[in-house]
Image (tube, rainbow over all chains, first blue to last red; front, side, top):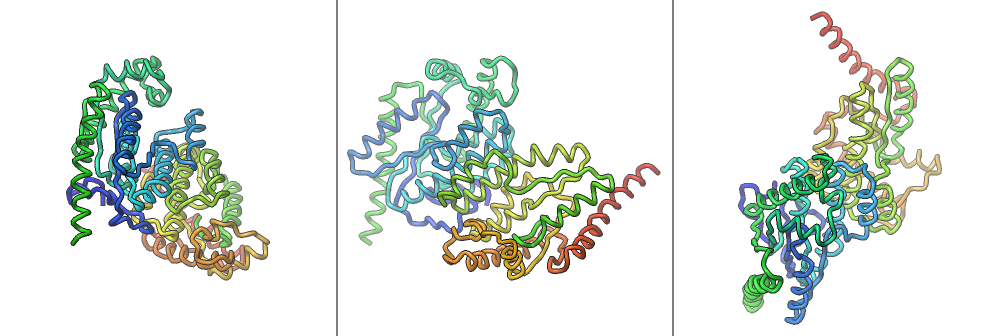
Length: 248
Length: 215
């Protein structure tokens, strides 16, 4: 099955498409909460605060994020340093990283009842591939083995704010400026065009994947309050239904 | 060229390359899992036995994509004959034997160029094991399918794993119309069959060109 095809939205906690046949995951008690968004929207700050809040309430939490897999990190770092990557190998290296983390971190955590806080999820990979013109259907099939998160928050920001925040924090880099796409020699113009295209890609996925969109231009604590309100409501509801199942 | 380890396909490929070059066809050879891009990750994963069927599959797809863009498409554009020692069908067979979803892996490789001729050197497992033993090849962990835990004995595990791979190849032969060369006969006999197969194809192309000239 293709992601987002006919049969309606995929049930959270199940595979999007062609499952990993040797890893059945039905009925696992854990939850995946993904925080998506471009650079400079404050994802890691929000995740650190959420973790603290969840743990105080007694929830077990693990964090995961791109290129953190033991298997792929050195290779991805090396490949990004050289200029031999193309859009296809770029996409596949990241998919391998995701698969490694999915099997070694995410699925075991779901099985053990943890809340997985994911700093970006497959949507970042899809947005980057989309901007580079990789076939959309192929990308969705590729990530058919990904598990649909229970909640996806998209921290949305406008182009102007995004550019200023990135320049203020760590500056532009080759890949995040889309320099591999040879949009032009001017790195600033390339960066702007690339980030604008990325924002369009994220926006185009919002309905398909049920993003909960938050305005990331607001203050950190305002965004955190909103995240906690929505996550709290979700957990209260799902804990209640688990409870009633147990009692029944 | 497809076939399990010990099917003799690499020997056959070498002889075919000699013949093609001698008859004036420029040849480029590319081997499965040979790109520098994923070498380090594959090595680390193999050394620690930490590869899963999915990451094993994706690393090989990355290797293939890298070679497709650097080693397969450019020689094709330059009018050369690319001889591939294993192609996407190897992934279809091995990954499915490891329990990866068949449709998923086929869709994964949909960016591959469809080969003009795909040959499968079919050999029974016992013959392949005998050949590998005769060459004193030490069967490696993943080649033997030891990661699957079917048996702790390398030879036993190899036989079980390659048996599953053979079953997958049988499906693939029908699905993609691979030309089967029985690989039990003498090297020379096999090569004769192989050359006949390839020359049929080259002649077809030549006659197409001749037709175009006539028009």
